[in-house]
Length: 293
Length: 156
Image (cartoon, rainbow over the protein chains, first blue to last red):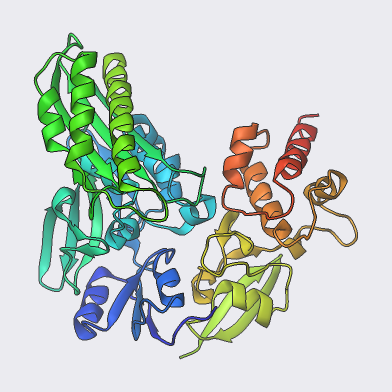
């Protein structure tokens, strides 16, 4: 299978990349890992006359953490680097889990977190996990930079608020507070190389007696045109003492907040059922994690 | 516009002029005539095109050849030393893990990447490592057995 013709650039700085984006606006795509873009180009879904390879740019490929700022992940960091990073496994293990569920080992070795987010598949694994963790994106263009909450980034399948002359440079995840548990569960048919039928991320913070939920975020993947926060389900649990009945009620609510479709992977009805099942599981697991923290 | 590509494949230096639209798979098979690496789907789903790039298993059908510059590539041809087969190759043959053989180069390289990093993986870790390699013939059991055999042999 062959790629369509294109002209190719390898800028060495973000500024260079941004001016190329401005120069060829509307006809250019950036390539990071290429695990989505190359596929789309081979399938002729995309034929950009110009391609900008970001991988020679040094500033956007690192993971850094400090107590006050939290976690910063360069857009070019691969899923493999995330799932094996000592600091991410220690402090943000749920994100390491989500990245380890993307595609396969081969895909994780070259696919990047920035690319995964910008590809904006409704079924992406890292998106609900990062939304659960209240992630924000640093976005650059010739005009400067802006910071966007990941929750507000997605517009539809494959569509984001990113302008066609903008680059996502960094993902910022705030520090996780004490007594917090975080879980990402992916329901799929196969162990690898499968889109999620349903993805559920739950981040729950409890009071120091570990009985009451003080804050909770539930993010769902693969059951709406974009990753979705189940806000009504969250409200049922927020500031309440956690008990089985309440968790079941919240899970049931989440199942009706989402807008799944029927496709070759699963029916909408099945997806709704699975949202209920996996939300309940994820909340319980996250709560146990918070209790143990 | 063609670029000069310099890389190492199976321990040897290569230099070639390549267009940006050539994938690493095309380069390996057509330019270097190393046809052990296969094109199964061309879309990164089947893993038949798996090679090791700087020690990591990648789908060469998704890597632009120009992106492999300065890298160390290992293909299936790079495993045997003359007529002496690599332990993984011996194990696959001995355990009956090869039927049509199309997935085999990719499988063996994924297994090698795993064992180089984790010399004593458990069964779950083996299955995860080959999760991106599809086999239509064997049902995977003997493939996993072969990899396990090499792993446990390394213990002794």
